[in-house]
Image (cartoon, rainbow, N blue to C red; front, top):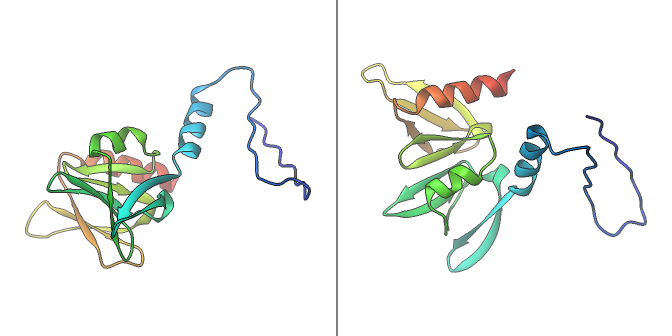
Length: 147
């Protein structure tokens, strides 16, 4: 696949055009990732588009899903299973109630006394826990990203 970038100072807005013989799985994945760059959420009565790159994790609390950023949490209108199918590949389900942005993971620590694993994030005090059931998938996605 070739990528051509044309810089035109006379152009009013950025346009991304894909020219292809057929839509391959790689192109579908690229389109899905590009289109899902933000999610709408509510904070203190106001609705905001949240850039997915800023989201640390999504978490369900009392049947409401919140998008957690470094310093705040925003209420979304989505269910966790809907987000799971909409989000790009760098998000992973880590428990029944949490989906994490693996690009924001600073460390995964295992407790000595238990099998519980704790995720800490870059530039944040927030912590989430990985269930045993979901850990293998998280580990696989983390390894894919490190290559």
